[in-house]
Structures are given as C-alpha cells and as structure tokens.
Image (cartoon, rainbow, N blue to C red; front, top):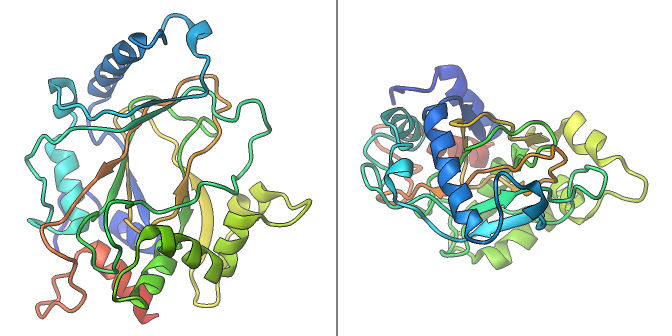
Length: 291
C-alpha cells in the first residue's frame, strides 16, 4: 500500500512498536480553540481556566462527544490520510463523517501528591463494547489527539511498546473471540513481562528503571518498554488497537487535554489477502503471529 502522510520509517516503527506520533495532525491554533471550548464546558461545573483554585479534582471526566465546528475542523485531510496509511485506503468506516470527539479525561493533577512512577493498575487495551478477535473490525486504531502541551510526567498516556504483538498472539489462540473482561487478565497473566507490569514488580524494584529506562526482549524477540505520550497541541498518537496503555500521573501543574477516538473498519481485518495488499495494522498482526 502507498502511504500519503506517514513516511516508510514511521510505518515500520508503527508495525514494530505499536504506535506512531504525527506532529501537527491538525493545526495548533485549532487545537487551542477546541481547548477553549472545553474550558467553557468545565466552567459550567465551576472549574475555571483563570482560577486554579477551582481545579480541586485531580481528574475531571467530560463524558460527552462533541460535533461542533471547532472539533470538526480538527479532522483535517492530513489526519484522515494518516489514518488510512495505517488501516488501508477505503477501509475506514467513518471517513468524512462528523461523529464527534470524546470522551475527555481532563487530567489536572492525577497522582500529584505521590512520587511519579510507572503504575501497576489500569493497564488495558480498549474495547468493552465488542467481542475481541484477532481480526475484529470494531477498532482499527486507537487515536490519542492532544489539545494541550504535554511534557514528561505531565499526564501523557503511557503505552507499552511492543505489547500489541503479545495481544495479537493471544487473540490468535482464541478464534472464537473473548470479552475483554476475560481476555485482559488472562493475557496479562500469561506473559511474564506483562504480569510483572500489571501485578507489581516486587518490593524495592525501581519501576521507572525496570520498565521505562530499560527495554526487555521476551522469548519471541519482542522488545518491550513503557513510553510516555508527550505532545504539543494538534499532535496525534496513532496506537495499534491491541496496544496496552494506562493513565499517568500529572506532576506538571498544567491541565492535560486529550481524548480517545476509535477508528472502526468497514469489514474485519484480512490476514490472508490474495493480492497481498495488507495494511500496516494487518502486517503487524501477521508478523506477530508468524513469529
């Protein structure tokens, strides 16, 4: 498949690591206009931009999806083309549709009262609304669009680099499909690195050194590491639908604005295309389960 926005190097990185960051997927000024819209919604709850004294809750969830023009303008042709660079041209179900942006976990100071660390709890891949199979069309990508600057230790979502390969192998062993409530704990328990990440790494273990500063290569040659999604307004992280991720503490003192967007496909992924016209998402799965 020919790519229109992402470079060959970015595509290769996505296949191997499970994510790629696209800077200025939509204009910075548009992201900041959208942020102002969100501040207006927060003000209705008594949380005001000009008064940090009202930022009492560490996290405020705006459990809404917005179709207003300020958000519709963020779905640029550059962003749409980059999505199709990864899922395949013409295979994304929602191209050209304004279906809304949301939900919004606005991270003001989550965990700011404790030393910053790699969390034990909260690691997951998305999809409570469908039965998971290795070719499920319900979520072709997870997008993490950012509407504020996110510095290191500033609340950027943590992703487990390489974990999409573990999940692909796990789901390939369960062609009947599984609910994520069953699949997630079983997958985490079966893999030594994931088990350590999600259940605790022992007393006295430096989890930042263990999981972020040091890469681990598992028995099948998969390199694993925890990475922060730092960004500027308008940047988007494109994550493989099987990528483990978790919320992070925000020690920056600045609110983090981002949302999660799903990217459903028109039909299930195909891992045996006669013409070999595989998308990068499909290629990553094929390589994982053949390895």
